[in-house]
Amino acid sequence: MLEVSDLRVAYGKIQVVWGVSLGIAEGETVAVIGANGAGKTTLMRTFAGLLRPSTGRILFRGREIGGMPPHEIARHGLALVPEGRELFPHMSVSENLLLGARLCPGRQRATENLEWVYELFPVLRDRRRQSASTLSGGEQQMLAIARALMASPSLLLLDEPSTGLSPLIVGSIFDVIARLRERGGTTLLVEQNVHLALAVAHRAYVLERGRVTLEGPGRELMANPLVREAYLGIAGGVPPSGAAGR
Ligand SMILES: Nc1ncnc2c1ncn2[C@@H]1O[C@H](COP(=O)(O)OP(=O)(O)O)[C@@H](O)[C@H]1O
Ligand SMILES: [Mg+2]
Image 1: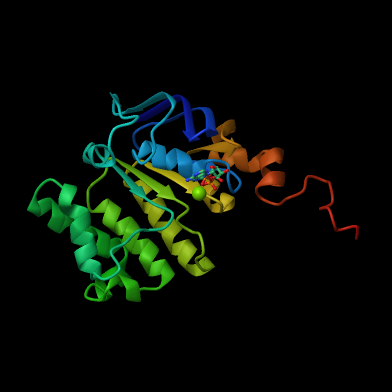
Image 2 (image 1 turned 135 degrees about the vertical axis):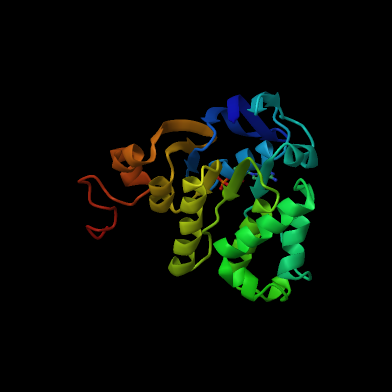
């Protein structure tokens, strides 16, 4: 579905992605984990066409998309749910959803998708006439995901869907990610909530300062001592600094 090789991305002279290679097969849920500033959002924005790679290949369903404009990449079936959600705040929930369907082939499909996203997120049906700006943070995140799904994307990119949300809401968002996985959807998930991300992902990549340093099945990475120490806060026999009272 997506094959990325030796991708480099820079902001002006500042290079932040240093030769990343990764792949996502159809039907896979893949996570990218990494500290703040590792380059996760930069990667996602590059896949969606919002940033231009300096070198490397991004093959999406066999087609080179690196440097293509965002609307064209979206038309080929890639949907990004950005970190900042980017809803239309003064439009209602249902209007936001129908705007998401503008790439969807045919009216019938749009109606089916609307039913389906309301079933995935029942709260959005209850609030369909409310303007998006009146939703809670969690509901806005749900709306952003639902809007992306309205286009029937073949690859869904989620950039930190759990950021800033309460554990209860985070749980329901991850339930939806698991349902998409069961349904055979293809998802690339960027998360700081490493525990949940590795649990839901078939495979994951660890990104450090713009480079992939580890990759493997989610459960395998969860058992990896480096991941446990650096990302899950489980010190492998070494007491956390400060515990001894510096
Ligand atoms: N618009 C920008 N201009 C210059 N540097 C940027 C810009 N956006 C991000 N960066 C830098 O690129 C690096 C990676 O950022 P980002 O991709 O947002 O990381 P992450 O999503 O993993 O937290 C950081 O060092 C960040 O400061
Ligand atoms: Mg980010």
